[in-house]
Length: 533
Image 1 (cartoon, rainbow, N blue to C red):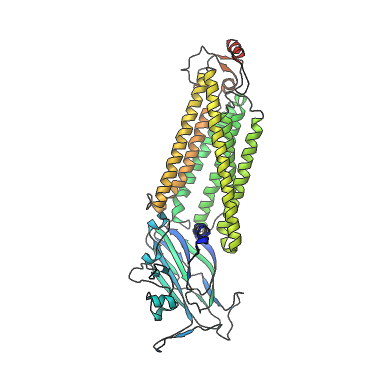
Image 2 (tube, rainbow, N blue to C red):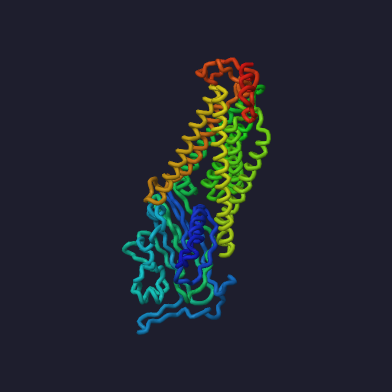
């Protein structure tokens, strides 16, 4: 749920972060709802969700309860708790009590594609004063500015000629116990796909505090899953089947050529297992969410944890591959410890950042302003550290890959060099794809949108496709086969033709038994003797 008000400049960054996080929370289709609506003419509260039509927004289970103190105690029958009667100067009208406004409407697609979001004034919610400030509620200042009339005092300002949604008005008595439920008029049938908003407004500054509690139900034609995640659910299902087939293929080959397996293949198999588990739990979370209307939190958090482990192991694996493990080295020596330390550091920091993100996004309404700011600062620092660790990994991979290729070229290891040339080409293509994806995402976000809202999951899915592309390529080039150990731990004779492809399982070429390690220091004389032997 969002709270929109006039903000000081010093709170802009934190406020934007809060809006983003709360909008993510608001996509939960059956959501427990608890809100204290204070009488405030300078703010409104907004809840958002995405529907694939025909769909419904059901607010009939919300209970509105008047309270006359911040302790949350229900109002008694004595006293009115304040001056809630307003009369015009000429006595033409009088207002007793106050009103709550509920507005349900479709947000235009370009709202998500602009830096400032939707201008609610253009949608018929609120009006602008002479200083171009958007006013949401009709109060004394709004009446003086001429954007509303005195008879609308304490109401949400709405331009009925522009507003295309649904509106409900709830009258609240000025004193006594009061509760209300939208039993008959709380369900809204929607016939268009898109992002919908529900606004709650308690605009009378002299009104009563209202507690709103219960749950909201958003249901699209396919189920309870937010409409913009429906495609992602099927994508995860397809990716899981692909992962499972890849895992089965690699595992069977490891069993078939068990005696020829090399350690790097165990790391590749472990990475596949992590990827399969992550997608399994993410897909399971979305399927349960779609059927039951609430998230399968165990699967959701396991998916997050396994995903972090997968990313950490993958980075370590790429460094090991680039260093030539299983091709020019039979072991990495002291380098192994450094790789493990950096990998564990990445996993721990990423996991802490993910957990704090969840706390910030789902627990924002339970935090004070100071706690929000402190948490936001910590997450920002952790994300910066993660970027630095990623840069270390990337530069390490590129530097190691260049060193290994230079060594293979000097040693005339044409078959092994060919494998690393292919690996470099794959990595360069992946980097190019990543840059194009980033540019596309920025353009789609800030330039009126390229893809429709229900298809925006494709942008996030592209990251997984890029990752799978690299994993499949590495798994194929380092696949278990009969001559894998011989290929890894012996030297190709200089007299052999470079045209022979190491991917040929049938053809075996003559190899030397002596294997100089890429990390050893060799002088030219020793190197020539070793090759000639």
